[in-house]
Length: 539
Ligand code: ACM
Image 1 (cartoon, helix red, strand yellow):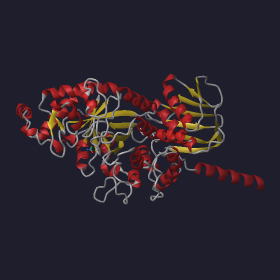
Image 2 (cartoon, rainbow, N blue to C red; image 1 turned 90 degrees about the vertical axis):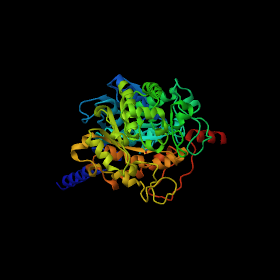
Image 3 (cartoon, rainbow, N blue to C red; image 1 turned 90 degrees about the horizontal axis):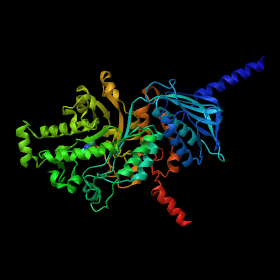
Image 4 (tube, rainbow, N blue to C red; image 1 turned 120 degrees about the vertical axis):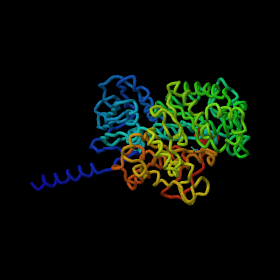
């Protein structure tokens, strides 16, 4: 009797310990329990693709495992073979577009989702569980996690400004890998601004021939841009990882580079911001910009175009001296320059809607009369909560990305001198993690919040190392803030899981800030391909 009693106690304790083990995945899942049997992943494991619709998701898993674990797994459509990772659609997955279940047994790994995005999210959780294990001579033992999960917000975004400094395709693909690893699903690509225009428009070749030279720190920097072929590649790569790419073509301000290429559409600027605006008083400007947007819309199948609309007043000094604008104001009873801005945006909005795309704009444009169901406002001015409130009261959907804590060009450590601060304000990891909307948005408006986004402006980011240093590890905190419901968030638990991710950053040559050892100076790394070539030459 005694022995049976002791065994029962032992088993109960073991079961309790199993169920208490925190799941290492970032962002923290809704529900995760640890079963007893592990799956042995090896090169004989196959990826079962339940439907052709999941082929791209399977290729994502296949590429990732081959890249890091050096496991070249084959795909199969035969449903009954053992030793498989099974990707299928299922209604049993969590509600919502991107929910998934991940069940790991000693026989198989089952990933189900009620959409492609859900299955990709399940794959990303699996990749984390795999990466945190050792590869023992080609076999990785994966603990028997049973996960049921779904996101809190549908918009989990990251914006990269490549006008100020161009990072290039390889760096962008690496960023997309990390975004997918953390289940971020919107890549907002800021491709045009004052220093340079970075995307090829075939109808207007001077935009890149002339407009893509220079950077924020060096007006003489060689031309650098994305060809339409490269854009298509990035968009496809992102789509395989459940990431939608949204281009931003900023207007009517921040137009300097475009105006260098086609000065006939410039509305002028001032000494600090020369040729900052497009000319709203020139009827041809609207046709020109609409032609550009037509090409943009075909390149980016997201059906969303961000038209900026921010900080226009930084460079409208010439507008009142412009005959065309004065006539426009008289003809349309526009009483001031703000009204001209609104008129411009309403017309360009019509071009976007005419392509059946949604219009995305910064929070200045919350004042413009735009259809609520086709427009999304990005709230960025943390010092102007009234602007967020106005957007919500007027019925717009919003993406929330206030400078503090979501502008990642703000430093993450008070001791850092390079990078932005707001007075003494900056953006430590904890603030990104703990960002709480309930103080800003009442219950009745919560539904209009699409989600959260971090923005990396690159005035102070001249190279890829600097981009990494500002992005990592805050990108992980952003992901958990956007994915995980408040009741499952815990900062201490998060930092415990985050510590285990640092070796993964090192392994990918990420030049990251280490919040657990702030004085650590990462080894300077040049981009991984160069580094590999370099060491190959040295050997
Ligand atoms: C912005 O930071 N100008 C949107």
